[in-house]
Image (cartoon, rainbow, N blue to C red; front, side, top):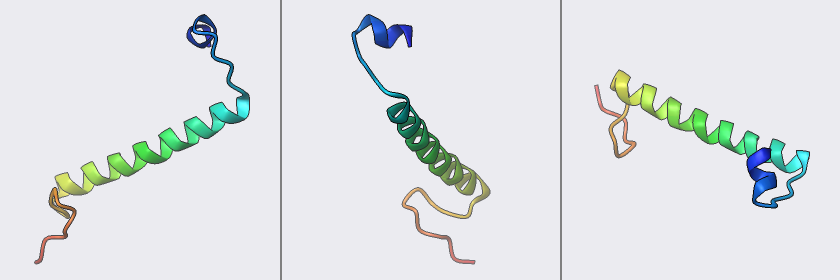
Length: 51
């Protein structure tokens, strides 16, 4: 919060919770994609490999 105060950015607790929720959601999607790619379940294009 010190950095935000330095730049005179006022942000409410609700906005912080919304930003954290969005960051967690995007992060979990990225981690899930990476894990599935490492497992060989999907390619970079997002298409499942045929077995």
